[in-house]
Image (cartoon, rainbow over all chains, first blue to last red; front, top):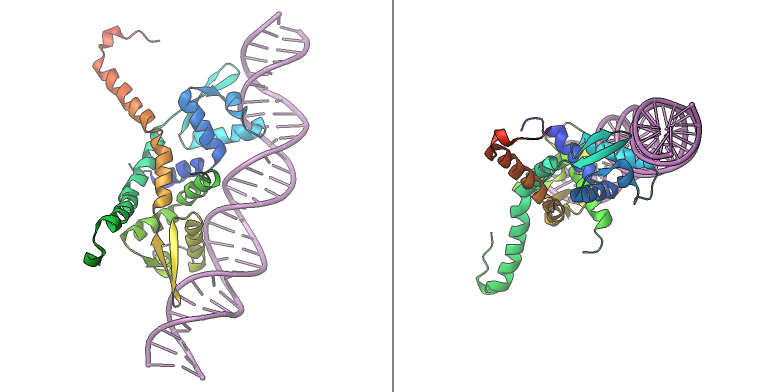
Length: 114
Length: 114
DNA sequence: CCGATCCTCAACCATTAGGTTGACAATCGG
DNA sequence: CCGATTGTCAACCTAATGGTTGAGGATCGG
């Protein structure tokens, strides 16, 4: 857990584009070639290829060159890092929900918040 | 849950910079002014102010103008959205761990892969 | 009222992002 | 060997990022 600084950057950046998130979603179902990944997208193959490279540099996708086609495979480990980072804040949004819940359960007359 | 398309983009993009993640981390402890948030960073106040604006546009931070200072408050709800998006993939990295576990349990003599 | 403080805004700059097109390397199917 | 398929690469464009500086608007402390 050392080289996290720039790594987390690249993972979140990779997730910050709908086309790339969609790619990940389809790779979750099964391995796909670059062409397969590009097909449903409204952009050129070269553009989609760049998106795959972004995912690759973030460690979210690995590639196996099989003849003339490049088969992409989901590499979920970096997602776990991002998940872990967000997990720290889980307490804050659940607290928010708890506070909301408390508003409905607590007698307003007893309210003595800090 | 409708306007998710560009919203998730902006949240992940906001998280894709260490300075902004650090800001969120310190806001988790308590509300801070823009100057407080800028102080530990190696950049100008104006630059830090822009980062705060990015967090604000992503809905991660709200601002209360108190006199001449702008007090920032952590707004964790969008983090929950990002967390929920990642949660879908949790199954894949835990599966990976299960597969690894299986490797250690299987008799190596039965290994028949290439 | 006056100076210091807090912060935004505008202008500017360099780099990256995201997209296009065209050329080409490599492979597969005959 | 030849043509079609698959994908990258290079060049180019526009727009967005991330940073700087300088100016100035409010506001607070006397």
